[in-house]
Length: 85
Ligand SMILES: [Zn+2]
Image (cartoon, rainbow, N blue to C red; front, top):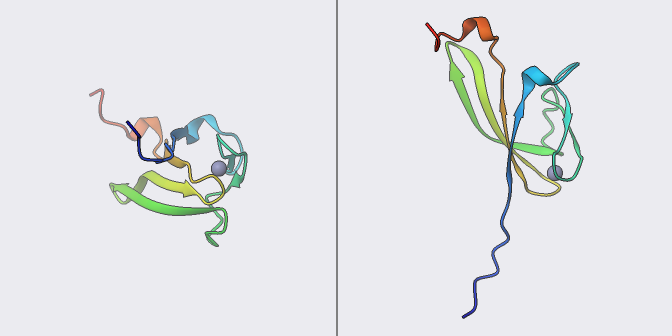
């Protein structure tokens, strides 16, 4: 039995509330510096954005170096989260 040679691509989740500074972080796999302010799409490509109450809630991007998928969350401040009401 031969399995198709599909490389499994990992998905990582980054919580922006745990990142200091301007929100830039190294790719969890290859260490490429990913900055949300970088709009050149040289280091990463944005796949999907999720907007909640006109605010960016979640962002899915792919690292152009290692092809990892990275999900960013934590754009909203906890006080705006009405989940625990
Ligand atoms: Zn990477």
